Length: 219
Image 1 (cartoon, rainbow, N blue to C red):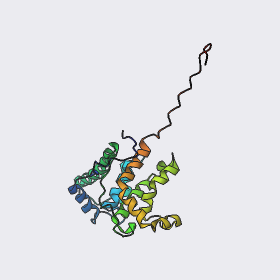
Image 2 (image 1 turned 90 degrees about the vertical axis):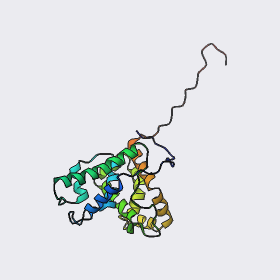
Image 3 (image 1 turned 135 degrees about the horizontal axis):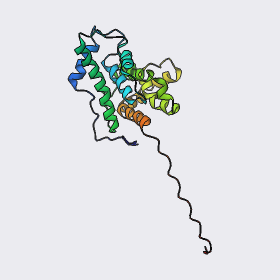
């Protein structure tokens, strides 16, 4: 199992979760008329599936596929259905494998906002998809340590733009420099969340007992 570390490995580059042609295939399908208007696009689906990889509990495929597609896609045939579901499952499973080794997932965008509001960029779409993954089983994410989970999820919430109607979040959203700094850290923040749910917190080592002088001996 991955070990908790205060300093993430910087020599190992982030690992892609699918090959480029596999991402292109998913992109084409999710952007087609075969899925409903409310289905997640590739960027949002990527965030959603990474959230499922991080999640403290596993959802049944029927549930997360329903949430991702918001209905049943119009597959051409059973072969296409199997192909698409296999690719989606592989993306999630590859994310688990990378995180389990203490690695960083490669995200499908440049890690910069370029001066744009986060919610108008692929970064905002990805974080919104990630939060959809959290919402799909919200109680499991917060049940053990609500405060720690909220702190670790704050960057994803902020960058998603889904909470801009909350005064505190709207205030944070004005700080472009802070947001840029969070964007650069997104792969590490994903790993931090994964470790939070997998690695027990370190407990202080017990202090050694003081030796007491044996009876009859002078101090």
